[in-house]
Image 1 (cartoon, rainbow, N blue to C red):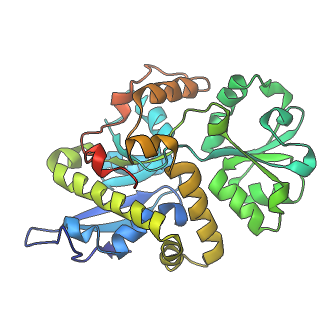
Image 2: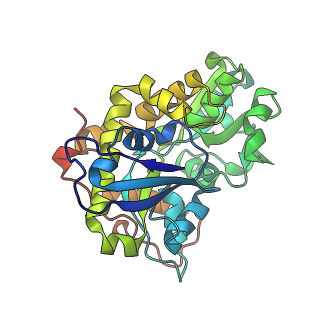
Amino acid sequence: MLVSGGTGSGRAADNRRITQVQLAFDRPLDAGMAPFVLAANRGLFGAENLAVNFGFADGSPEAIARVASGASEFALIDINELVRFRDKADAPPVKAVFVLFNQAPYAIVARKSRGIHGLSDIQGKTLGAAESDLSFRLWPALANENGIKASSVKVYKMSAAVREPILSAGQVDAVAGFSYLSAVNLRDRGVPAGDLAVLRYADYGCAAYGFAVIVNPAFAAAKPEAVRGFLRAVIAGIHLAIEQPERAADEVVARMDGGQRDLELERLRTVIADNILTGEVRRNGLGGIDPARFARAIDQIGEDFRFHKKPQAGDIFDDSFLPPASLRLIN
């Protein structure tokens, strides 16, 4: 679907040529992508002389591959998967230019009625995990960080499609997933909120950042102002999502097939509270990284991934397209 931002206001589109760009998401649309939907619907991309076409990939590796090949100029992907991608000897120098989720949404979502109230309670229990789930890749680091013997936890492998149904049916004690997806979906399935323990990795020493915008390197070199304009529009979209979550949820649901407004509103509020508006963001502004923290995150990835050459923060993240920090602060 072609999403044109229109002319907008402020940085109004002038007679300059409109730049057509493709933005790939790594999964079907949900309220976590609200800032981009708002940037499209409210004319924020158009005000930056951009016409943005949304596309959807099957996971972060595919979305990264689209940007690497030039099939998409931008993608929203899990930055930890980008770290793994860049370790390939022939990997194009794709970099992230904006972090949307300052904290990764990785979580263990458990049933309190199965005796799990904190992370240490997972020992001796059965944990459901999808083979492709990015949260499970950091489970060894999380277990090590918290003195948990990973071998004491029985892992039940499943497809992502049945993760929440299997937990709600009581076939496992907990599942690894994303807090804003699994936890919200389980409440929608009738599991009482009071019976859910959402054990966010970030609360147990995981340094990982989450979803980030990446850009095709050739496009960034040829049209740096288009990249800067794209990020300005996204930042404005984040502000709107924070200020108007109910309207933002409505606009996302209008683009979904069978979306539920109440579910997506809860999802958006969870994302804003847990993943976007963190203490780090309130201090330093949207979009950037703390290099020392990112170095710790890379070390944690290395506990379950053998690097050929461990990257530095600058190998993965390029902050040169960001507006000044003063323009990225949340008031």
